[in-house]
Amino acid sequence: GQQVMQIPQYQHVQEGEDFTTYCNSSTTLSNIQWYKQRPGGHPVFLIQLVKSGEVKKQKRLTFQFGEAKKNSSLHITATQTTDVGTYFCAGEDSWGKLQFGAGTQVVVTP
Amino acid sequence: DTGVSQDPRHKITKRGQNVTFRCDPISEHNRLYWYRQTLGQGPEFLTYFQNEAQLEKSRLLSDRFSAERPKGSFSTLEIQRTEQGDSAMYLCASSFPLGNEQFFGPGTRLTVL
Image (cartoon, rainbow over all chains, first blue to last red; front, side):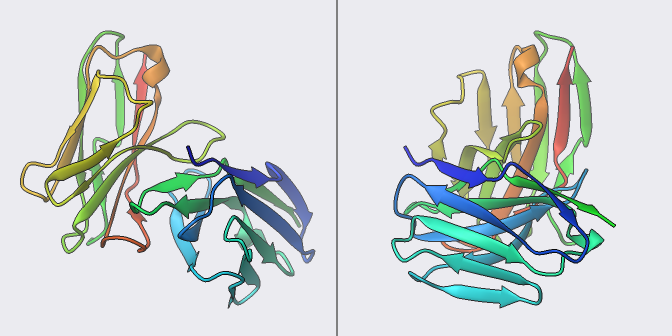
């Protein structure tokens, strides 16, 4: 079955620095979604990527979908304390079911 | 509040007891999903509905778990004969069909003693 892996599991970042988290699927995805979960909260949708090679930006966040539609990345520039949380990628299969990765937990040091 | 709601928010039960959770999705959404999340992991798919039809149930889900969505609106998830390994956060989400973002509820945290 479909497996979605994320690295790194943890990311400690100094405020103001950039970082990237990566997502890889064992199968080709129809689309990939990214969610953010704050400590004690529930996952909140950030973005969806559908096309091969697609790049989307949301302020300081840049999302990329690989050419083969099997991998994705999230790059955050000039990290702020509000970026704290766990970022999940989730691959959608052809039936609309999401397979979540284990997430990257981001800790920001002021 | 027009978001996804779940009840109860917390449930503590003894091993062997049955528990039932409720999820009220966003009213316009015809898809409803149940996930389980344990510490340090992403949400794990359990089952989902389109309107009242249950489309898929995870093969990882034992027959102690059952879900219903009788009128295509709210849904219930029942766990029979709970075990300590069932302790987790149970999340519900809703969406329009295929390829749309899922809106998650606050979850029900289950603790089995």
